[in-house]
Length: 98
Image (cartoon, rainbow, N blue to C red):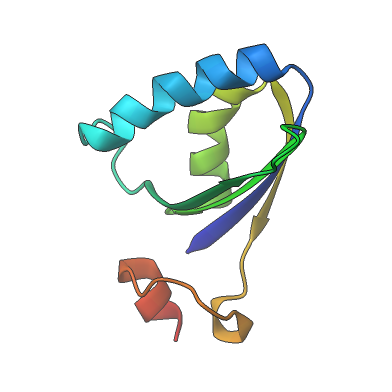
């Protein structure tokens, strides 16, 4: 499944620390099994970010990300309706939803 997250950034300094921790995990393939980032879009003003991930469930992704991101943001997770979406990458979970 694809999971979207709206991040309302409450502490930009802590948020930057979080992203600097997650980025190497992504680059080195050290994410939990079944979790894969699709895109990350931070706002220019640094107050919000939107991202999408492939995950086995919303709860799996939340269990992974919330301990890392909650010091710097309030997060709203939602399951993406892949059949009605536009521009999604055709990863394993996205292709299965179509």
